[in-house]
Length: 256
Ligand code: PGA
Image (cartoon, rainbow, N blue to C red):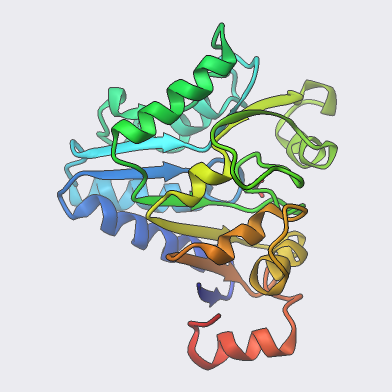
């Protein structure tokens, strides 16, 4: 695990955009695992600017997103299909057929879960998976208690997740109750993981992830077992760390 501490959201986003850019600029096939939510918005903005300025060829880039709500039309402003169009896809030349999100409106949602895993497999797996972290320690929509061996599956969203996401909707009632998400086993299969965290609301979850014991009660703790995990977090998100964990990060900026 590498933990990079930065001062604020802007710096977190700059570092993350630089890392993501390296993957797409290499000119060879790259499979990006993408995330939605408030955290990666600036990362996408900066990535878009860089790609546009450098006229980067993205014909070899494929994307797979972590999750999608069930029952929201793809054109709904809060669907993750819409989010990705708005923040990334419409601004950069990734071939449309190479961008993938779970279909939350599939007739047979269980079949869709299997199909989504097949897409990831057929691409040869994810090269770098971008992740946020929920205040309750969720990754993707894998809520506390999710078995670590699950692949793409259907979930009932935790009340705290619906409340956290209500800020994007007109009211809490409008937040879907179900979603389809890559499972923890799917996420752990990614070759590299880049987790971003900003703000005090993430401090407890991040402390668990960095120094807690691995437990399904806090899904993000499974990432301790990933062979190539980089965390970029700002001071507020790291503010609950113990002195011991903090000194390890401060000594080398590379630790654990
Ligand atoms: P956020 O969500 O980026 O909107 O804080 C992160 C997450 O729930 O994974």
